[in-house]
Length: 104
Image (cartoon, rainbow, N blue to C red):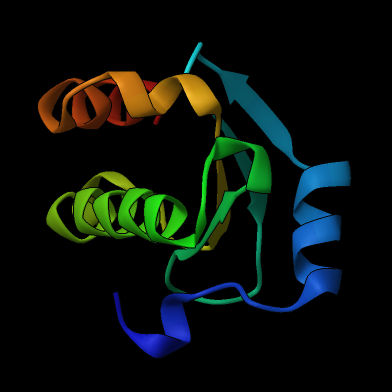
């Protein structure tokens, strides 16, 4: 992902989560909300309950790789927030990729 494709600010996260649409699976939640930009933007959140910093960063890297490899499936003019759950640690990468793509 490019730097301009990342949602980082708290106000953006709050706006997307409180006003956007969401889809759930047992391993993650995907929020989406229309944005004024002509490209999709992404935010990945992993709570402290999931594990230590190494575990959380590993999971975030996996999600970013899934997004980068499948960027054409995401709609332009939309912001996405993906919140990972603790249960996502128990599944392999291929299964995680399939589930995230099904949410889209």
